[in-house]
Length: 134
Image 1 (cartoon, helix red, strand yellow):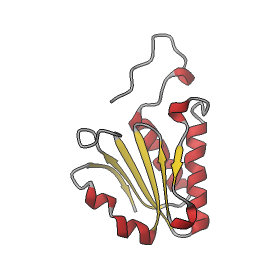
Image 2 (cartoon, one colour; image 1 turned 45 degrees about the vertical axis):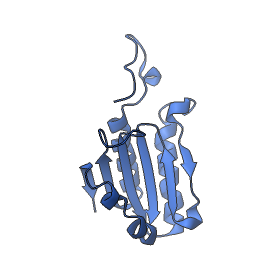
Image 3 (cartoon, helix red, strand yellow; image 1 turned 60 degrees about the horizontal axis):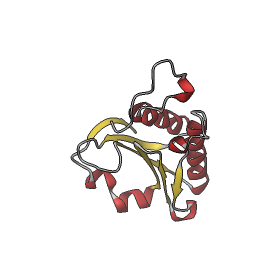
Image 4 (cartoon, helix red, strand yellow; image 1 turned 90 degrees about the vertical axis):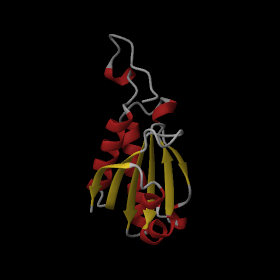
């Protein structure tokens, strides 16, 4: 884990989210919004830029937008004013792939076709699968 522990006596709002905790909350939010084929991969020891990938599929552009909003809501619920917790989004909904950089967790939301094409699970096949929800 790259993030330092919070000082003693710090309030919950002052504590940076643990990467796995944040990843699990994102998974829950995506499942609540009906994302399909949600996967949480542990990349620790395999990646130098993040610890976890959350990968999910959207059945339509409208659903993709809803999933992006779900990730934004999870982030905002954990002191969105902190730069470390605000998602940095890349991609466009109409292109079928959105990426949110949450530091220790990177979220990929794909249209079904783009997910099959890019095959991130295959690329990161050595990663440990923490969660897989069909």
